[in-house]
Image 1 (spheres, rainbow, N blue to C red):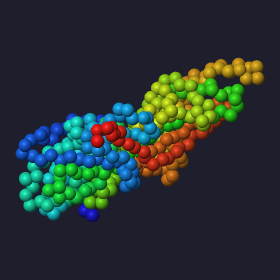
Image 2 (image 1 turned 30 degrees about the horizontal axis):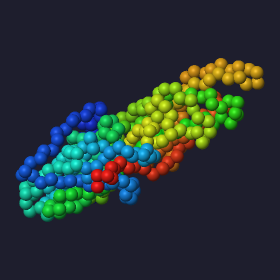
Image 3 (image 1 turned 120 degrees about the vertical axis):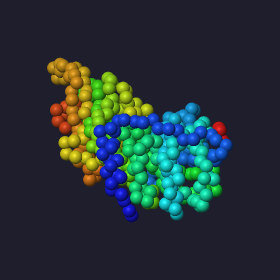
Image 4 (image 1 turned 120 degrees about the horizontal axis):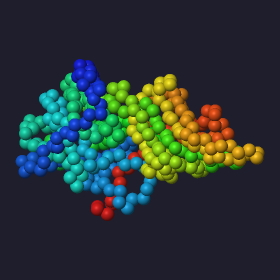
Length: 360
């Protein structure tokens, strides 16, 4: 398969050092009687299996019971659309910005302008960004994601072939291209006399890969990340929360509290990354209440700091594309100055688009 290395290298150079700069972009053509409306039926998948579906025009959390599943697409955020006529090697839809109008995602195109074209190969990505560059023969395109876009949980669709006279509704199947990361915590101190004394004060993930260029292969439907070497700290928690005792009272880590449900926790997205020795780690800051043991009073401990390295925790020391990681932290007061349990649990990505079925 052909590739133009120059366009990728050029894009990487332009993007490096400017990964936090976001251009707002220009909305695609508004409603026009000379143009035809195309509605988009959005599906989100995991490993090619349907996980959730947004019926056109409906996306609401109203009246929906909290679940462990997380929403992935926000109608307030547009996606980008690319349309290629491979028969004549023409780019007919050049990174169109597709927004929602209250009835779902839609756009307007002048189908009559595409005389002699029988079908289009359509591909999309979310969220929308400017500066997309195309490879040789339009077989691939490179998407420059900065921190703002990776915070939105990037998705890329599989390529679909669509006849020009069947563009009224286009179904797009999106899949995750980043990792979703979160934490659970508990007090695993075995001595009952020492349990229930630990307060979580701060939890920070250090060296989180957060910007890069994703090269989407339109032909194969696969893609690869070209990381920019941009890493950041993510303050997951900051507050004062008493840590529950035992695995039965383990809770998810929220922004400033410990919560029962994943959907209420503070999770963040990361570009799939190789874990290096001494690089990526989690820093936990906690207090310990004063206590009496064997007639001796132990003074409270303030702002104890522990760092837990990620190297050696995941198979081959690699975050896999589209996986959801929940790291479990067990704090043991009896081994306060030794290594504390820190092990990950890996699950397939769970996601949903909330629907109000009364509208159907």
